[in-house]
Length: 406
Image (cartoon, rainbow, N blue to C red):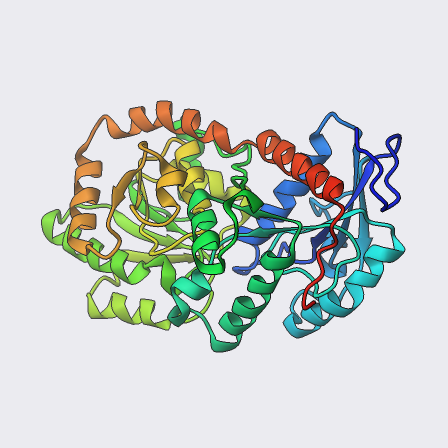
């Protein structure tokens, strides 16, 4: 149980934790991916904890909370506060977070505040926790729009310096925080993202055949699933695939699935330059509900990103038992372990040979069907929620408000 520390905490009352869930979205865009899914999985996991020592208030966007059938729903331990501007208004959302949210936290007597996406308000009236997903805006600034990278560089630095506790989604991200922002390692705790339970093998040939037919997919295909933006290294994947076609004219088609992000026009141009129009299909946005079948129906999943905070698609593909190739850099070895094949993302020749080898390896799928789900159990909702709940308790005991700009 918690001890009183001057903030009005009572041993007999649950700790009141506020969570900024403004970036949870269910729209058909790239925003309905990484950080949105992270926040939603966090809320679901916290609500499943058997302990009654914490109570949660999530500040959600009105447009998303009111969608029919929305996964956002109040639970016994979770209250939803519908507030803030429309999710599409980035500047208005930032203004709300910086100017309105702190007053809401004080008025609702929140005892610990968690921002799940990099940035805290400049003033927080209670101990604070911030999750940092990656420092790509520092490592690869050329991959971001100028305003986007400037905002992240300034506000993320201030947030992690002043937060009571910092969560990193991988050891690689923790290393970046220590190196780039000179944080003490003991201030940063690694809590891996969640691979949801429905990402699991499907070996029912009828279900898989029906799925492929409904989406006009070939019997055999290589899959990339992720946001179309520069650091995903889709250009490198296309160049490797072109080399694979030279090595094996019968290689499966390449399906590139996912919503467009930014700076993606060169991807389409490269397909034309490589004369791959007949072999490469852009599937567009894939709904969250169908993603497990997209993985399970693929012969091979390839995710050669240049940099990731974690790389959740790699872990999800392995959970579905699909042979997977990913990069040997940043956090991706943590996502794939020794189950995924790792390749230098800048070496398209090595990637082509890795794809050729995986396609020819008849033991690859049975091996991944056995090892993949076993590996990804470490990314469970219960483990992540328990770790976050403990961090909230530690932040509350410290009693140090997370105020920026002192």
